[in-house]
Image (cartoon, rainbow, N blue to C red):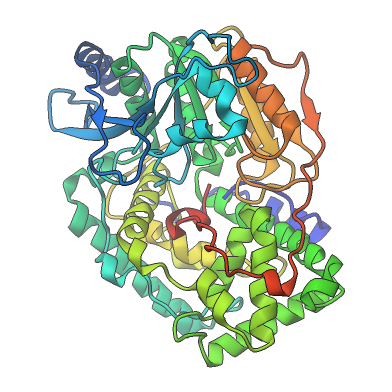
Length: 549
């Protein structure tokens, strides 16, 4: 959903042509910056600060370590009326351990709470505190209470829904890279029905699920935790409303980490960002195919990028004629390989599954790409929140001919993700509530403490240009780049250099004097065919967050 070039002149020129204002956009409501909503946030924060959070046993979270505690925070549905309807956000915490992982005799001083959001929109951060069990996070877990939460609309936090979860996974499905007019007509009808379903199932409060209110909720959570200033880490979409927070409440910021930053420029939110994300995924898909070709001796899918593409297209055509296991068609194949565009540690198992399928064994592909029906309710909820937030945040073209024109052009050079991204976001063309005008994210010199931006140079979900734009707009920020890498979300990952900058910032408040860079983490190692996915399948990003930041 973010802005990365296609590494080709054609792609660059095309994206330049598509940066005109979306034609036929719905009218936008003015941004509430210092009006009733701002005052309402102060009222709600004061109320939450007095009440605090009664943390207790996490009764609804199974198999969680005893150190994990849960509670709720009440926030106004509408910040312009802080005394009106309240909704409860689920908050989780693991207290600082005070244990130095490198010196068992040293007691580490607590520095407060570190609040985290995983992105989406629609991502659930309840499980974040458990990262303290991982070696890469133990130093941070010693100094901070690790705090996660379910944003408004997610999970138990006033959950949104747009359709019956039992109907959410429509597998098997087609995924034409050059859809016919009849296919487009059918998808337009589906988008209209979905938007109507959101209004029907979620009610009149639907318009209050937006990024500005997510930022305001963050300030109420800060107050409820007893923190005079906020220490926050946002990943992906979490960087966007984190930047809104920095703009709305700069004096409330202690430290902020923006991991895989969204392009926050108002004109990018969200239509243009989706176009640019689709272009970026084409480049990342090429990276993946190069890796597969390099390991043709393991997978036998082709020695060139073109040959691997041929193998993929052959599998897609075969699945179109006869879905694997009756539930994996071209759309499910595409979604599975899209997730590999986010995380390169998926590359070996995805390549194994494709290779095995073409050799007559569909089981690995069914395991990895088949719909996770047991997670249908969670996936439907995540998708509903994603749609509501992005549709509410900004104007969108309301005439499908605009979408058709822009994406037909883009799909000529970026066919892998373009149309899937369209169908995911098309309900915004027919959205039943008024839209906001995006806030101009920007802070002046001295308004905001130093902040840390982390970005992989070839990230497709939130392309690198977005991190550069975030850096330009947040005065005093520092950008740390993982060169020649494309994993989405790099904090606490396999790159020790990146983690060194993260630890220095969160633990000591230190940032590089100038922009810094790290060499890429090691490429994943191929796995022999007989070592394929008999393991537990990797957890997939929910569909509500795959084609988005």
